[in-house]
Length: 159
Image 1: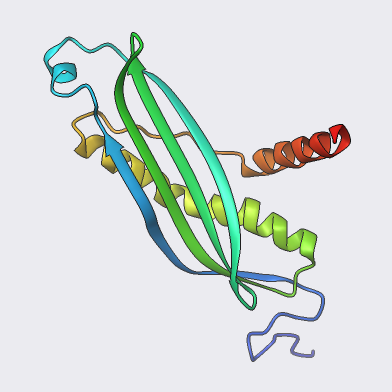
Image 2: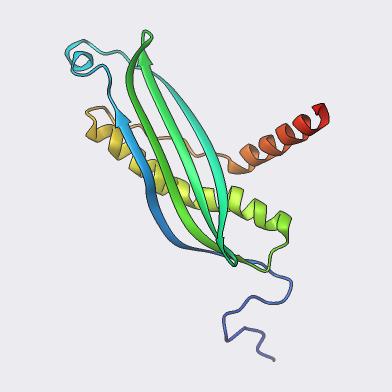
């Protein structure tokens, strides 16, 4: 029986590898523009709107910074309760990937791995702002990516 493992930990020819070297909060903002008034009234459940964005930027050979941006707006009866904004980033290395596979790794897989940590940061910021923590539901980054690709194709066809 032969040994087929790679003892030097390099990817086999024709395979891609992905690794996240560092994760960090790039930007974090929390506002409660209606405080302290909002805490003095019997507050009902606010309407919460969440927006997500993913951007990837090359920072070196095979190195990329992927930024997952989350914006949460909560309001009650048209009055803002709180606004939380987070840019959570990771520096990752993608080796041996075709451009299409690399783009999918950066826009789908890396945000999927960053999301649980970003969700915890947002929940803590909202809790520290005096509100119950908001636990965001898991995001289907594959669907977000596919929707972005479809929108880009539609824009190209219109132009």
